[in-house]
Length: 422
Figure 1 (tube, rainbow, N blue to C red):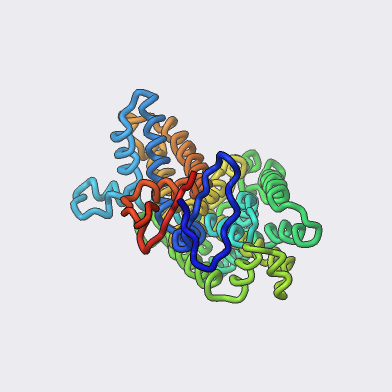
Figure 2: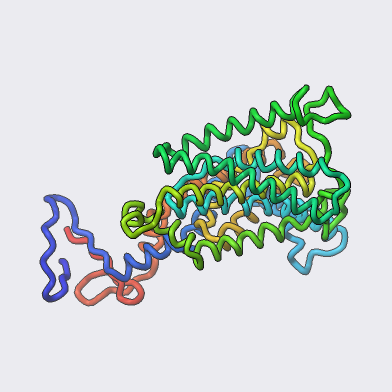
């Protein structure tokens, strides 16, 4: 059976053998709102399914998934948040949590760098290169001008790193605006250029190689005046620095920019429909450049937090081996490109990265080398399942208790109906 509003034209009959599916406007509006406005149902189900599948992988190796996840949780230090954690356990949890938050800060910025591009209909897969050039600018500025006052030196190094990342990503935005080049291709190419640029600069005989160690492919150390102040923990043991507040402030700015500014409105309009945005007077090409430059600025700032906060130098193997920026893609997808969601997703992945590290995970429960691969597996599952959020939400609504509507249709809250007619 099918229901048609009085006075409305009758819909065309479905092809033979295919059912007619009628979605009420209320159901469609709620579904669209949940998928586009950052609904919490799909991300939550995504995390549950990803961890469940990861648990199957753990079980296949002959280990207990529950014990493994508990050991990872303990290694992340998140139990410090519970009041019943006390004594030596609390001290250990505090140190582990500091390490988790050290990773969370850059992940927030890298997730925002991907999320803002998504909102404009772009795919910024170049966070790796933008992060690297930001790190290069930060280590150069931080190892120079030793007599400069502390706060000025820190701010200058962060500004230069931000500008370097913005310039690097702006190249891709300009190519998209001028030639129509796909930003996925150009950002991937720029990633490799940034990697080998860093290898050249800090390699043996490179322009920025360490002056005191000519046989080591590493940069000069950051001078103390350019290091971010530590407010929790021991500065000599990588205590938590103020970069986490910089990342949270950037998330607030991101929310304001995206939801309360003209540039954010233009970015979202271009993301929904570039041609309609152009017809309404928005300069689409300029928007592409500004959006990519903003994304690069966030990724470059993330690089400066790591260099000025705890690394204090860059080696060529660091440049070639870092994968943190690619994790930002999963953070943005799981966070639904929203400020709050990105912060929570960054905390989850930061906890996974540090909870599975060799120094934090109890090898008697699960081998840390395998657990680090487990983090990658969960990351891939999150990307896979987030991209299938329509299916997840349909399953969720199908399994919800429904009351039968008069006439035989299945009804949800507020009279939403789904009718399938053979």
